[in-house]
Image (tube, rainbow, N blue to C red; front, side, top):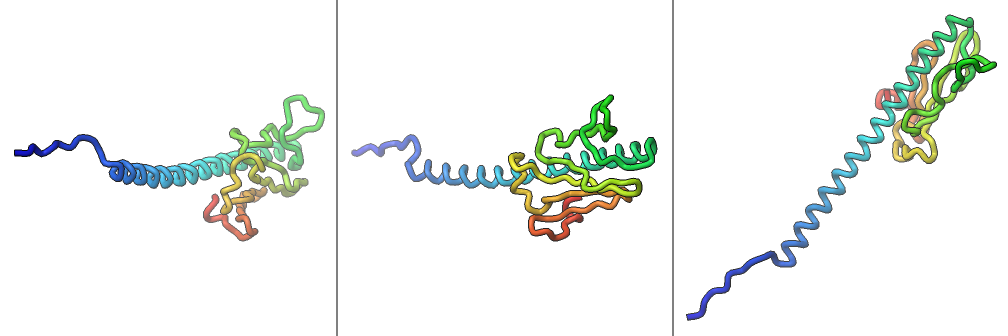
Length: 148
């Protein structure tokens, strides 16, 4: 009587199927993770804009005008805002678009080498003296509700 051989291990096709499942799951997880990073860096830009706007109001109270300079240090000859011109993780650059005695606008745009190139929904974030927030997507359309 012939004895049935007991099978141990996995067939090559079973291993390949398992690898395909792992690859698909990993690619989905990576895409989700990338979107999470983009959103977190965008939130960092929003926080930087709000902080800069608050500093503008302090500057206005002290000197009667809004500052047209960002990245000012203590004791600098020309007064300005003590706010960094880039966000903490160097993904967005802050700039004062215009500033005078009555109004200002501060803009945050993604840095070229900052890794935010995939954020097509929020290419330009801004805030002005009245607290009005604005965001534009890559094609220049309003995307404020998505970005702020």
